[in-house]
Image (cartoon, rainbow, N blue to C red; front, top):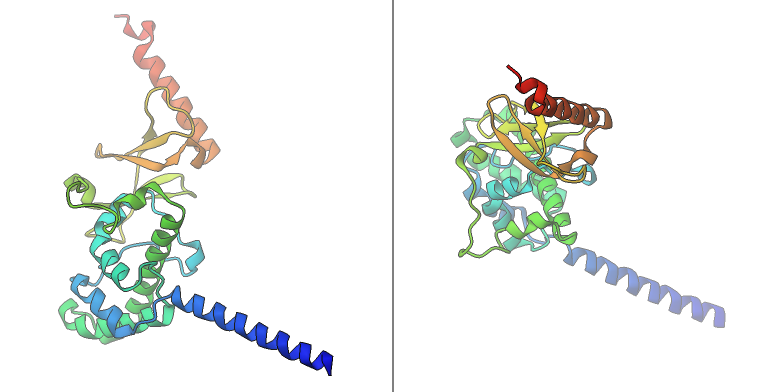
Length: 256
């Protein structure tokens, strides 16, 4: 009898804890409708590729872009609208898919998109959007420096100033190729690797690298240092810089 009574109390307590955990989890995710999310996205969907980010299908493997400041600047209105709906940017997959289905139904004629392409578009945009939200939300939790440029953390008195050339590209780093990649905003499928890297004078391996493209464009990759590059590539890079320094500044080179 006593054993049965104790078991009953334990089960009741266990169910209460489980229910409380479920409530906590639900509070941490968007509880609104797909229509609400669709309405938040619609004003920003002026073209079909209104979100451009990592397309990894595994949300946990979404990569942090080399220049998150540019990503935030390009997507600030979208991030702001979603933040107003769900401050921690946590949107369930099913709700996101349903919202994008509603959105493409509304916008397909404007985008001149055939019905047969709708499912593929929804699948692509769902991973792009949720990967972006995941990376930004994790950046906030980890207090990354670039999160200070999020629209709800900045003030109108100190806007971010970015050159027009920088706004024409998204920047990332390919760890396999050990190359910085710039992708034109107007041509998302075109990836342009840099020609070489350079670094400030007397820089250390942990200091930021500067990527240089064939047309002379340079970009400081704030989160890519010598340590992040492939060891072989980094050693070749340092050797190249040393040889270049000898050729340019050696007394023998200066002789007539």
